[in-house]
Length: 248
Image 1: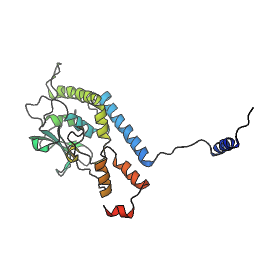
Image 2: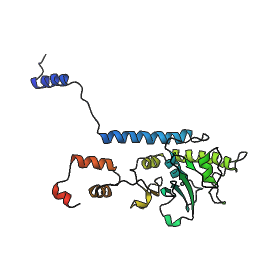
Image 3: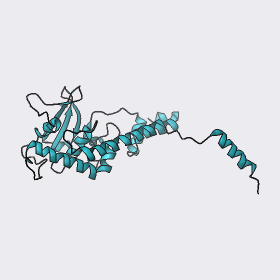
Image 4: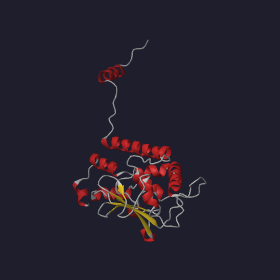
């Protein structure tokens, strides 16, 4: 039997002494992994459970509004405006990315208790309050939630049943695009993206914009598909020289 070369034996003993190799992912990688898990879980809930009465995924309103305006029956000129109690816009949702086409707006007021409230003088049912609030502001000619044949199908309650089925179906059919929109950096919106066909499930505008340095903005413009967190990690590993920083 041949003796093992000393180098190989030495390396083997050293590896045993050190124990098994361990990989420690970066903080950014861990954060991205958790974000992907959350996005997957939210889409699963929309697909599997949104047909249930009064059901909403946790923190899933943005995904709901993004899906809602992409339904075929949602008019291209009808916008959703999520506002705070002072009437200030927090987010806007539109089928396209040209706000100049807007003729009517569904206003959803978000209060400090993290609930959506009806405007003064508007009475909303205790059942499906958010979706009832949406239907109460639709144009009279709207066909949203219509087309099914069952008792009461044309009532608001019946249309909400159909709408829930349509939302769940759209989330299933457009899962990759919806997943990408849910993973987008905060503040990413259709009105600010310099692309001809932005992801339809992004908000038209979102107040939650984040401040980034000039160099991050430059890198982001060159690499729009790369998350800002990844670009930040790159700059930490390969910082700019003093001469390069002068350019920014």
